[in-house]
Image 1 (tube, rainbow, N blue to C red):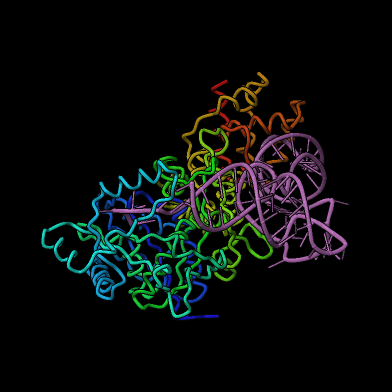
Image 2: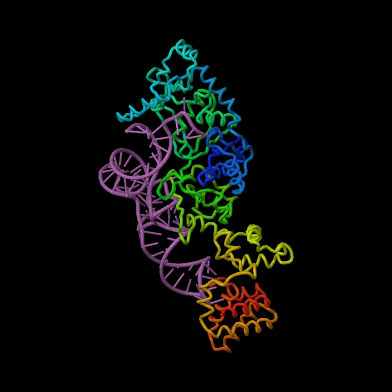
Length: 503
RNA sequence: GGUCCCAUCGUCCAGCGGCCUAGGAUUCUGGCCUCUCACGCCAGCGACACGGGUUCGAGUCCCGUUGGGACCGCCA
């Protein structure tokens, strides 16, 4: 199964931040490379000078690194290969597979409008393809600008694609199956602009050839380009790579997603900032158009590498059901569910390492968590993780666990602390009682508290909920005695007394 | 407008002619557990776009309709 020669690439254009669609494309390529022990290369398609930015390149690299989608070669810049693209264009011209076209953009625009008016399809009418060598020479002498167009074989002129006389471009897409495009439906497309800059269709193919790409795995929007690129490969006498197009990810209104239209929520950076685990995001993205054979939802990195198959990729587009301004979900609920699942089930030490920088960022980190308080730290993270959805929940919702500086939530105050006026007296009394509990364990604290509530002739629940509110400031949380043991007698007593002051 | 792709619960997926009175995940609802919330467990709501064929039998194959999407640039 292992093929050392497999080479794939992710070739984003740096015109915006890395968005989840791009990340998914990168992920599929990466998985495929890893699975086959192949090479994953990163190529930045920066030939659109006007729209490409360095910030964007940086954001893409950062995003990929954060996701853990490491590349084996690159990042290379497409613009560096421009001489090769131009060389390829020259070769096409020389072999008669391309020609110079002197039609102006205005003329073409005019023809396009006319065709539109008559509700006819428009394709370049090949005016310049019929120019004699002398006519071409004379126009060049006049210094007229020209573009280079690819000469699409014209069956009506007796041109065929190959010796078989095929009148259409055919290829086998790994996910979409046999794709056929008639030559007559392909216009003589431009490969080099009048200012001498090669266009994407050409550059991309030439780069893939030079990079020795064996499998082109990209979004379905590339499917329409493929026949033309195949024509280029053939004209250049190069073997074809395997093409595999993956379904697109659409927004809830079923439109293509873009940073411009949807904002941060579609960028990878957003998920990093909101406390997603890199692999949890990948796991979510992975399932947007692919499934394991047994339809598992939680797929580890190793499992994904082992089980990934392009053949199981879906053909129908999928919807990224992100939410905005939703009180409960800040993105696709499923993405959050997967993230939460990892948080509550992953190895606690690994989680501890991911939570650490979050606490640090919030000024809640104690260096002792790495040394003598490490057990306490991991125990505490373990105690609270079941109800958290993102890493951000640890410094935010988890603040009372890591700091004496926290606020009592109004709801907790009202519902659990002000419920019974006698709590103002009881809390300090209970504080005294707790300080004398020795040893301070799950069982002993519970016994002490229950005894206390029996003496006061109230239900233990009343006291328990009040104590939780006093100690954590929150309505909901872990089991109370776990909390008590976590905080220890001193902090417990302090917090109880402090809360009583608010009553 | 032309060419092409796609079509199962709200969303993500399973299904590759009989195992489907359509399964899982997520969301939502109810219950159990219980000191609260969450977790966990149980239950419920919820879909084969429509119409024709083919077949003993169709979610699964074919055609059409409808709907959605992509591509059709001197953008990538």
